[in-house]
Amino acid sequence: MAAMIRGGAGVKWLHVRCLFMLIIYLFLLIHPSSASAHAYIIKSAPAENEILTESPKKVTIQFDETIQPSFNSIEVFDSSGKQVDQKNGRIDPSNPAIIESDLKEHLPDGTYRIQWRVVSSDGHPVEGVIPFQIGNGSAVDHSSLEQEATGYTPGLDLVIIRWLQYVSNACLVGILFFSLFVMNKPLVQDAVVRKIFRKRMKLSVILLCLSIVLSLPLQATIESGLPWSKVLQIQVLMDLLLYTRFGETWIFMMIGLFFLILFTYLLIKKWYKPVWICISFILGIGLLLVKAFNSHAASTTNLWISIPLDFIHLLSASIWIGSLLVLVSLIPLSRNMETKPLYLELIRRFSKWGISCVLLLTLSGLIGSFSFIPNLHTLLSTNYGRMLSGKVLLLAAMIVFAAINFVKGKRNRERGLTTSLWGELLTGLVIFILSVLLTNLPTAMASPGPYKDTKILQPEGKVTLEVTPNVMGKNTYVVLLQDPNGQPKKEIEQVTLTFTSLEMDMGTDTQIIKQANEGKYESTGMNFNMAGRWNVHVHVLMKDLETLDTDFKVFVGN
Image (tube, rainbow, N blue to C red; front, side, top):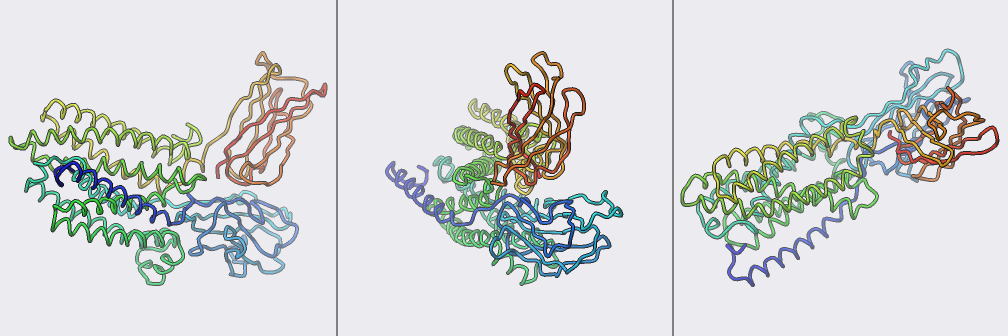
């Protein structure tokens, strides 16, 4: 910074202006509506596998969030594949979280399936099938009565376009960050450095512009399910712009991109203007903030904590990786005897900022992960957990490379520095790929896996509850009862489970479970009719009329 303005007072004033503009810009960008990460069914009528005595007039499905008004459908088919609804599927005008469709009158006995598709507030499509039955005839094939639900699976087009956006944005932010806070005066005035920076800025802006423009038809393919050859129609793109949250966000990105192109052009033509560097830097990180509004962080209940945390995570990663792109671009300086000391000094100056980025990246990542990883089991049992585990391992490798570069810069050692810098950078670019995938996968909260927990009751003994597979719908419940010596508990009259949703008031559901073995009670049921947090109360009645009571908090997947 001192290399670009004169005097300490100028430095302070420029920092104040930069901070002020940053606050104003971020305040304006808070406007985009928050989103949720994939819509989950709360209830449906008919319910999954429900057996009705007579033909219903309509079918309804209620989700845990508002459904976007475009690209949704709800249809009903009989066992032969014939459509039996009145083809008037719609969002309930009194509750935008409900989709419904009227049915033809007097449907005959048989099996039916509700085939639905909606787009969550975060722009991710979710679709599935809910089976039900009319009448209790013996000819029904129960093996076909299975609920299906699937979400969007990231494709190669999404990975490439979103990765280009991450990398180009990071490169631009890295160059501007170096110009403001890291570069020393001799390097700033160096003609070779200026030429390198101008080329990198041009390329970054071109790729950023391309990726943001292509993100509109890309999102159209995601939300509509249409191929690229069909989403380029004006009507499809207009529906996306006018009726979806992504369309609103995309308009904000294009406005920010327009001003970013303007000020980076001025920078390229008149490099010495610090205020243009400040404005371009603010616009660059503003585009990162918009990304936070389309991430899983926007699905949590406390948006004022989760979104800033995700923004800090993305900003620190972008500064770190973008700065590495700058350092790699300036490697030729280390091969010149005159500029080699300046380059090594640059490594040392950046190391302090790099350590801060690592700390912020690690802290924000850990806090954010707690919101989307219900237990350690999901780190290996879900796609989201496996991707996150891979990201953590790569981050650890990146930190090792950073430590090596820090030591070499501190000791003025050039040998092997190029290899370790490239290793750190390439690892960071792979991490960006995993970040793209994580942003577009359902979180591990959707598949927490089988539940098992034990409560110790003094002096009665132990109560263990097992729930498999622990999802919305049909589950197997096992209660194990042991005395203080660890032996199966005897003299039990009855075991009862009471289910209460902690997400919303849905009343209680009670089930008496049967004895399988001594001290072991087992049953199946469809008591979890929505995903989320549940309380399961275990009530044990002994033959002497004494009772044992305890509660288990179960997070149910969908």
